[in-house]
Length: 295
Image 1 (cartoon, rainbow, N blue to C red):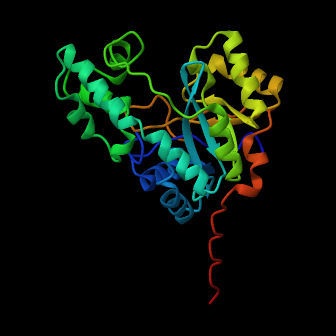
Image 2: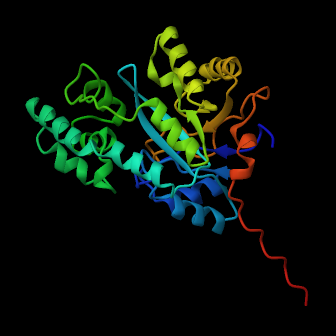
Image 3: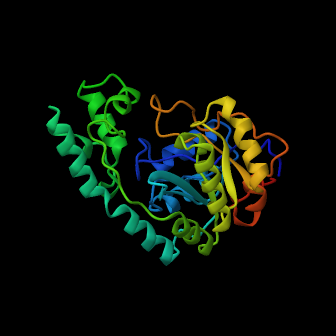
């Protein structure tokens, strides 16, 4: 398969913190020319069967997906899993445990916001949540925009919810080794999501890539809606240095909110091995359209 395939292997539905249903995302991906699609909700595989069914109904090939929250060097890092069995018991249990702390964290965020005069934030955030187990900072951000505290979600994260600002509550997620193991043992491939977002020093970033490889991780997002175009060649070089396959995904959360629409990214650089080449046997192919009947 070519690096020119329009694959979008990172996006979110309302099963986690996106604004569209799995079915609406499948339709949008198909309309935008996506040829291979994966839904990668945060710490949750509850939308996988719906996403696959919707993709196949449109003739769109599908890869199972998830984005697992990991604590590494006291920072939150995201690991995307692709091509795994979404019903694998160990993976399902691990994700359940990872989600477990979000409710208490959300209450702490709301208490901090109340201290700076923003009351009712927990109840406000809940209005945007499809799954209360997955309440996140994104839901608080939407509430703060809707209630007029901030003009957009970028302003929310500049003023609140991030380290050093009101509403920042750290959380201990899964370990890097656990996340990679759950994905691999469920038959899938682990991919470092949007590495430029973590603001690690070069030494810390090298440690992340090295440890990820040691645990059996095989891919990294190079072309993603969470990277600036100037960062694509940086992570193309990192992929080559560490012997990782390259992935591509918009990180789309919803219309009017995401910088990059489904299917709208440039192609992967040609010298890289795309993750979908290594996952060829895990791609869930859309059924062939029936041949027209001859009268």
